[in-house]
Image (cartoon, rainbow, N blue to C red; front, side):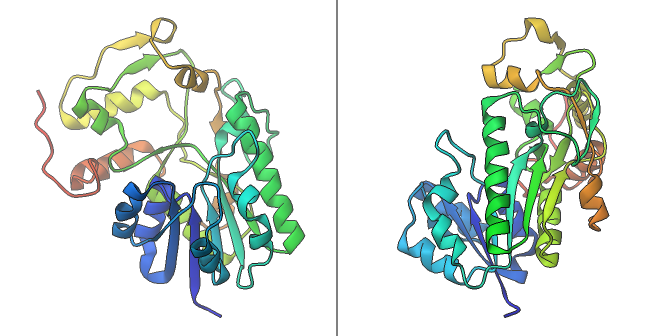
Length: 300
């Protein structure tokens, strides 16, 4: 059977980018938790199904013919929701060739600004990252059990159309928080899609950091976006005095530079190796708002 059928548990922002990149290459099913999001999946070329922690007959039927399974659902206290609901079904999937699990570079924890690659020890700090490490291990174990390759994709900060510093500047929510020495990696959704398709096409398993080449201070990204728009960047705010949610503050408690050695070794070439190339493209073609080309806003 050469035809691909892809099933995405949790077809959100990254899943829709994946489907949009190559929807003619495969039949793609994807789940959402709420009926309100069904239409947006259809528009992305995904056959929508509902999944909120319980396996439905419709989901079970789609899994019967699925060759490639992508999981983009956050783990919970009780474990991975997909494995909890569908482990036996997945174990028995007759056509399955490959599993991909979307994780986070948060599993590495804090390295004091040092470099980490896929061989680095996971030292998760936050509870959500601890749960991610457990979920990664559960999926890898399942792969060994059923003799199928499992790819763990550890994603850095995701951005793209509708989700970037240009949008934040336009709607007035952009801030330049400054914490000396702090850097973050990022990844454009098109490169998440590209890396996923690359691994799908090769049925390639392993652990892969899906991240750009240039960890950078977050305030620099806002400044660059403002320069493209021809607007003044917002004033710098010292991290110590910034009003932040506990989750936002926790991100700044981890500082590392993440290398993408393994996915490059597997033959993938990044479309946007750094944020400047991505912002240049989004600004030039007007896709930064929501993917639809529009006229740039006027600075002022």
